[in-house]
Figure (cartoon, rainbow, N blue to C red):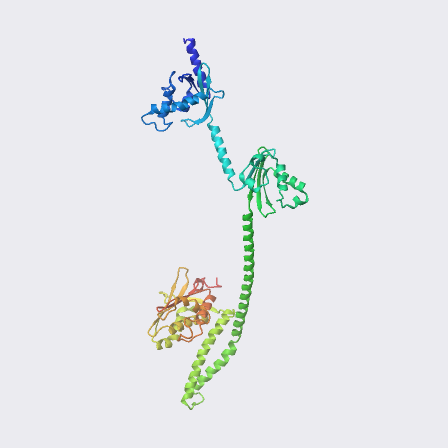
Length: 542
């Protein structure tokens, strides 16, 4: 059985350990009397160190060994003695009526509210309360307060009774007529509205005609629950966006942003956009009118040339016919050798002129939509052979080799569904160009192939003078040639290639021109799969 003294000591220890504060007691001569475990945990004191009668200097020496006062080195005892005077001064404060109080961070990481009192006839009692949560919350609030104060927008907070509880710095810049940060706290919403009205900055019409109604309207707006937004324009031209979030229990937070620059930029952008759109519309109308006028002029020209076909060809055919009669001396001898030469010159000039007129009229008919396709099945080999014979005499005179490699490689020849007259003109124009622009002794090759899209491609390749890259687009324009009229030594109107392309496009095909100056030229006529005759693959057939 324990003695009454032992029971008393055990009860005291239980009471101390059940406390929610750290506890330590010192005698008047600064020796340890009592403590609880919570105090040891806060300050990381080991139990083996703690004993009744332990001098304060020994405890201080232990703190020095932990690095509380810097690097102790090998003189922890001496360093403890040097700090003893400061600690004794703190103990002396405990003897004053107010006692000793401080907030400090312990080695355990806790923020502690330390309090020490002198008990007469006993010694010093020290209490340590954990205030970590409070300190952290206060510092977080300070940090938030500093951040809110640095916001570029005005912020004001009101409680549920519409009294001001907080404003940031920007609020007083936007509302300079309001009381300063200290005096504005507690002001009512109505007071703020009247201050704003009295400032003379309000541009709202109601503020001038019925000021009281304006004040009541502002108060009513601020008492709407939930999120609301509005814009306010002042007499100085500044524009503000005001956003409010009001809760019936917690009150309101109102954020005011200066959006003047944003609005001005948006208005300027919209004005520029409207101006640009108006200019684009105006220019579009002008271009459409120009295109319409060009189309009308082009159509008139094409219709005129198409209608002139009979009027131009009839007298020209008469000239050619009569010159042939004279050359053959059908009605008897001309009587003079010079007349024979004149008749020959007239005949050759007439043939050349007829070819040119035919090209002009054919192109005009295509552009005027007056060329009608008379489609039929055509043996491609036969057509190529015909075109070769047409240029054979001219090619032979220039010592050119013309080679045809369009065989399919089997017994089934290429048969296409097309307008034979158009295909004849295509092939003859392309071969004539190749002969015309290939130097004597050159080579011209006619070939065929099919591509991945099953197009039938007929190509004519020569090793003539070629065309410069810069001229490739120009030679496809009407009445244009690669060489200027001052430098070229070949006759022609520049209508051959444009006419060929138009005729190919009438067959839903593609015309491709590729050339390298000094190397040669390849022109390709690409006919779509539906133009190749197969069973069940003829346009309009089933």
